[in-house]
Length: 214
Figure 1 (cartoon, rainbow, N blue to C red):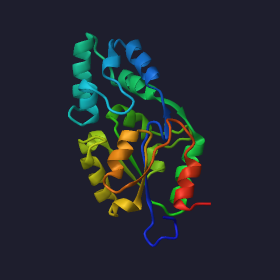
Figure 2 (figure 1 turned 90 degrees about the horizontal axis):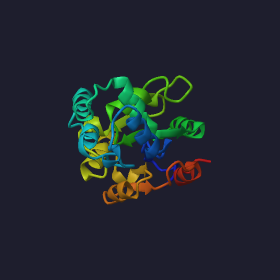
Figure 3 (figure 1 turned 180 degrees about the vertical axis):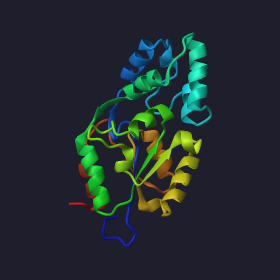
Figure 4 (figure 1 turned 45 degrees about the vertical axis):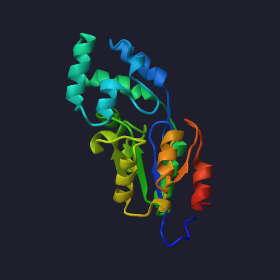
């Protein structure tokens, strides 16, 4: 299980909690700031509920979600307001993580992202405002597996099977890093190797050790 294997390990990261530190409380404050009350009923660290969950599962488009949330709120919400609220989840971004992702790619490891997410987060994350250095997510990953585009969410086996197919390798040849133990358990049940770091923790030593990167 190191970089000397004939089959190069594929490294697949979660976004919130791994690439950046996650803070649901900031998102809640921002939603309330734009007029969305009782938002706590819908927001979660790992999987959203109601129309928030439908958005991330690809059952609602961004416009449909905005229209429905505007109706419930009694105020016409803008796309910019919703992006502002959703990106409250991204409490802290770490240059160390960006450097590590680039290092893995430079070492020849295929690097992918598998995230329960939505168009508002991705509008920001794939823009050149994301990392503070003029780059979006696509600078750091070979492939992005996004729940709302795939119309499936972690921890369903289907999304992991789709990711395995996309990576065109065996499950045991994938290292999946996610701060959700439930997601890691679902991946491990399919034979995927997993690492379950705490939200916002420094996972570099563990990842590099598993992959044999010095």
